[in-house]
Image (cartoon, rainbow, N blue to C red; front, side, top):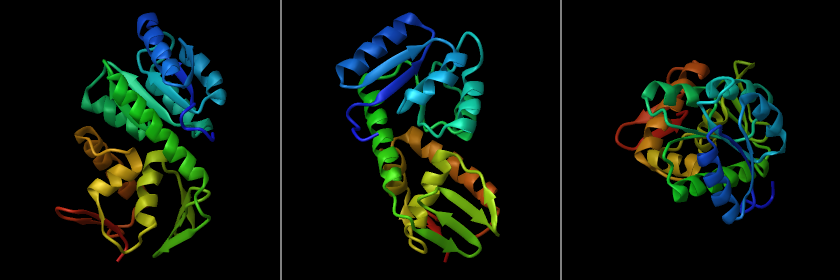
Length: 225
């Protein structure tokens, strides 16, 4: 992907009215949308997409199950679009590897901004220097996006790694919540702040190194001493 203004967007949505409106809006704003109705189709069509907009209420299977299967085979950015606004569904979607989460009805300007932010982050990841950051017995490879803890590789979602990478680029340095949210999500909305907390909780549990991720009360976080 080289042009963040022209994204191949796969829309997975069974509601014709919603899908037609989104496809028209995406095309009008320079993107190249395609649309499928079923989760099974999404698990094939994702290969030709730069970003996936995934509805959770699909006719053949739950969208969260589609997300889980997709994350096993493709790191393509996924933005979840759904009428479900309950906290449990939001948290589960993020834990399964969703890059962002928007509750319907989605404001078009916000959706376009989120797509652009995902595109910029994805392009930046492809250009990361091949640095390996070592903190205690934790190794973070910024290019291959692999993390070793005590010599054992651990599995992180895209967003969990993105959060860790922002901190790893500044080991021993305090990073504010505002800066973390800006660099990982492209904004600092209240919803994103809650999302950051979910990912940090998951990250600490997976790293299993108490004291590695320090919370600086009233400011932000630091990786290592």
